[in-house]
Structures are given as C-alpha cells and as structure tokens.
Image 1 (cartoon, rainbow, N blue to C red):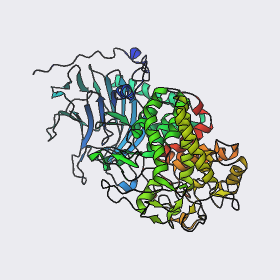
Image 2 (cartoon, rainbow, N blue to C red):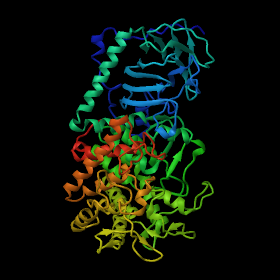
Image 3 (cartoon, helix red, strand yellow):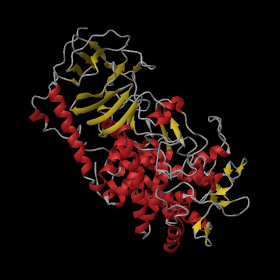
Image 4 (cartoon, rainbow, N blue to C red):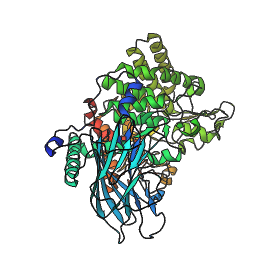
Length: 635
C-alpha cells in the first residue's frame, strides 16, 4: 500500500489559532448512561497511557506519539529513557518528572523531565484532532542525549504507520495523521520497533500533526493555551494554588483502562503499574470522584460508577480491584463512603441517570454490612474466607478492610476466627455506615423507592442507638469498645470524630468532642493536623503509615462532619491547616503525597508515602469547600 502525506486542514494564521476555545470539544448535549459518558471521555489526545507521561495518545484510535531519549555517551545505566513517572525519592526512578500543568481533557499539558543531566520542558496543546508538542531544553549534560519521537499503535488498536522522507504517516482507517517536526530528522538507525525520527535534544523543537507548522507558530499556540489554563486557575482567587494542586494531581493520574474501555483516575500511575495496569481502591476512588465534583461532573460520574461496578459476587464493593486476572479482595470491603459521595455529587448536579447507574449496587453493599459485619449489635471490621484470595481471613486482612492498615486502634483487638471479625465495636465504621444509610435513603427518595427508603432509615436508627452506647460521658467523646472485655479503648484517632458525619451526636456532644479533643494541642491540634492517632499516644512517634501520619481522607471526613454542626471556628482551623499542609509539598516540588509527617509536614520523609497520590488532593478540597466554591457548579 502506498501512503501519501495527509493534507489535514491546519491552522492558517495566529489570529485563527487564538479564536479556539479552551476545551478540546464542546460539552455533550445529553449524557444519560455510562456508555455515552465513556464515549465522550475516551476521546482526543491525552496522556492516556499509564506507564509513560511522555506518551501522547489519540483516542479512540490508539495512535501514540512518544518522546524518548538515548544516551550518546555512557553515563551509567539505563542508556535509554522510554518511560516516565511522577515518583517520590524512595522509588529511585532514573527520571524525575515535575508536573506543572494538565487540563483534564488534555488540551494543555506541561512538565519538566530530568534525566542524566538533561532537564527539558515538555508542553502539549490540542486543536481539534491535531496535537502540538513543544520541547524546550533547560539544562544539558556535556554530551546531550539523542531525542526520539516514536509513533506506534497501543493496546492492539489497528493502524498502519510508515516513516516517509521527513514525516511519519499513520493510516488509521477513516482518519490519517501526518506527524512532522520543526527540526530536521538526523536519520540515526536504532533498534526501535516502531517508526521513529531522531533529533538533537539541545535544540528547541516542535512536533505536530497535520500540515507543516513552524516553531514560532507552535510556540505561540502552546503559550496561549498556557495562559488560558492559568485563567482557569485564577477563578479560585486566593485559593487558586490549592485548586491548581488538586486539578493537576487528578489530571496527570487520568488514564484509559483498555481492559474495560473506560476512563478512570486511580491513586497513582506507579501503583497502577505495580498491579498490572490499573488498580482501583474502594474509598480512594469515591474520594477522587468527590474532588472532581467540584467542577467536573463527568469525571466524578466516571470514577464513582467505575468503583461501584466492581462489586463482588458476594455483594460488597471490594477493598481493591486490579486489572490482571480480574483480581479483587473477595474477602473484604473498605469504608462505606460510596452513598455519601454519590449523594453529594447528585445534590450538586441533579442528574438522576447517575443515581440509576449506582443505586442497585450501593443498596446491595449497604445490606451486606449488616449481614456480614454485625457483631453483638455493633459493627466490626472483618475478613471472610475465600479461596480466591491469598492471606485472607486474618486479623491483618480485617485491618485492611478498615483502610487503616497498621493503625494502633487495632493493636489489642482480638480476631475471632469463627465469626471472621475483630472483636472491636468500631466508632468509625458505625458512623460511616449510618451516614451511608441516610445518604442512600435520600437517593431512594429521589428515585421514588419508598420501601427501600424506609428500610434504610430503620437501619440508620438501629445503629444510631448502638453508636450512642459508645459515648463516653467522662471524656466527652465516642470510643471503640473491646467486645471481649467490654471496656472502652483508651486510644483516640480521627475516627473518634466520625460520629459528627452521622449526625448522631447532639450539639452539646459535638462541642465537647471538638473543644476537649479536636482542638486540644495535646491530642490533635498542632501546626499540622489531623494526625492519625492522638499526639499523646505512644504510637504517634512511630511516624509510619497510619501510626501518627496525616491523611487527606481523615481530614475530609472530619470536615464533612463539622459541617453538620454550628462549629465555624473548628471548620476554619481545619481548612487552614489542611491548606498549609498540601501547599508545603506543592510549593516545594509540585508533589501531593499519600500521607504527611504530622510534625514537619513533609511528605517524602518515609518510604511508604507515594509521591503523587490522588486522595492527597482532599487537603485542597477542604479549604475550597470552606470558601464556598463547592456551591457553584462547574463542568
């Protein structure tokens, strides 16, 4: 087959370029199903390919344009950089990526990539079906590496790609793309399995699809897109930096899941690759949906639906679901926040089709908790035997169900091998479950399911009465109870404030919890808050995962609880300190961490703190909500 250069209509003048809109496409006229939603989202150029942030992929066709580098002199292994991740220092990746900007729809992206003495700025901008990529070297080693632009089809998508004299042509069936460069191809023969071009990495370079473009034209267009991106951030006023951190974090973690043909935002690309391509965690993904809901309902819907659809054949949303071998935690679930988040999203955007997509599975999951985790009328975390899961049916697995893996709350808890539950009445679980019942009852009301609503409200009342049995009048707070000894736990964590989320405490009880504990500098109120165990607890000094570090989801749940009561000062303090915490890392290295040191505010001081973890953005959502931005609808 003879291929000819594709004469795709391009941009004729800078004046015409400047008239284009920020979004890659206009919003759809009507989306009323997940199928239509995915057709809308899985479209256009974006960094869809999980293993490589330097791979720009066109959907639905699957054409990938990838920038890579090959050393010209030996500076130590590896000699070839063909993947790039945002990582933390402990992950010891050869490259370092600094995420500068990323529109959700890929209409503009910007990052710094550093590797073996080379630092370069890589920007991309979209106009209709065409992409422009601008490469700008910042610092160079003595012997700059060779730069490659590789073109290929990924995920076994169909297409014919061929290198021509000075361009690459991709015939994708109904569409044909011509890929060119403002720099002359140096024609270096390399053992690369796809059509490619080679260039001098010391020169500023523009790559493009469509008709021939000049470096000046590409630079102007890319800079205009950058200005438009900055204007989007400015809408959030004094909190524009917080919004930028959350938005950029989410956008760089957007991927295409070819296993299920959907667009999702998992916790991080590093975690995805470790799990075989993608992994969704239960409450992590619902919280991701909540962050999107601030201004983008489509990604909020997509993530909430994705994790809800991972429900197991036993009737619960799993702790995790991953790509390879359809792996799921068939023995355990994770905190029941799904109905709460879905109701928040619906209240904001008022689209019933979304509720219809998630309702049945959320109801099944809600019923499962009562059947599987009721323990002497309370609720306890557990892990049930299942041959499909290795290492299940254990105390450790039950702790994993809580989401608080190594929390000192469970140090003295007994795991009952007959009931498969911890012998611990959990304040946190019961509070989240009551909120789940109430939120789902609200959804049932919207959908006209009166019998379900009555059932859910009855369950909320049943466990509200049991939760009140965990109120410790002497100390003015709800406490976990050891169901073997019948005694209250002496340990305190942010979960002890979760009853505020359920609405069960009286106003007087709420005020005591806040004044005597949350704002007590000997327990939770330090420069950064909220530590995952009280400051005066011996485990606080461990500074290891859920033993003393600060986590975005804990802050967020407590903040939502505070909104149920007249506690403006506590809300203000938590919002300000959450903002200060996320901005400390963002201003330092443009990273948002999985968890933070509660003393120093650092996020990269320990190995088990991922460097770019989605739910860290909740620390930005809190001050944005407190400032009233949640109450304005965005798209």
